Image (cartoon, rainbow, N blue to C red; front, side, top):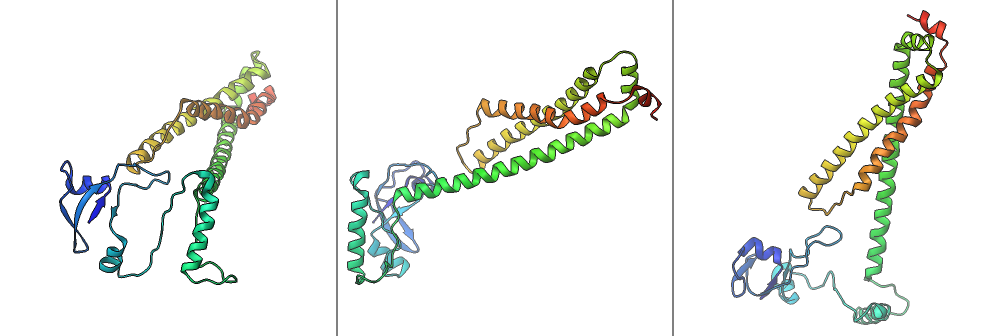
Length: 252
């Protein structure tokens, strides 16, 4: 006898009623006596409906050939009594395993709080890793923008000298090159936002992760691009604004 998760039912029987049918597990015929209510995907991305439930003695003797249990799932009546339930389970297992008072446990007990803490710690490390990669990418991109603008200032030295000679002020030159730096960084930011949005859609469709991209994230990405352009574009723009008009006109 066995109970089936909804994923197994969908794969084996599609729209048919599985109750009363017989399936084979490692050559062992098992009669389906019921199916479980769908639970969906777990927070870790695992399918909670892809399983078959059978009597553990049948699995031990006829399928795995073992005489022990790897995992036992227990449920407390409420969250408040979980510590007491753990103490009772530890006492029962130590008694069944014939462990003395000075011997260490030969089993592990994990509470939901421990799993949640482990997931939160993993998520925090992953966030720090992504933040480090993003910071490095911003630094490299900013240096690239600054180098492009410095080359642009060098190549357009005569143009800057002509503008200064006919009455343009240092602020006009500075704003001109700052605007160009902002335009370059904003274009890169928009392309990056589009690539990130497309990547999230691809991950959601292939790995079936539930990803949410809000409008705020898109706006923050564009704003960061503008700030990046101003920060790394100010030095080339200021260098262009401080050129001597006479020397700039003589530049070839």
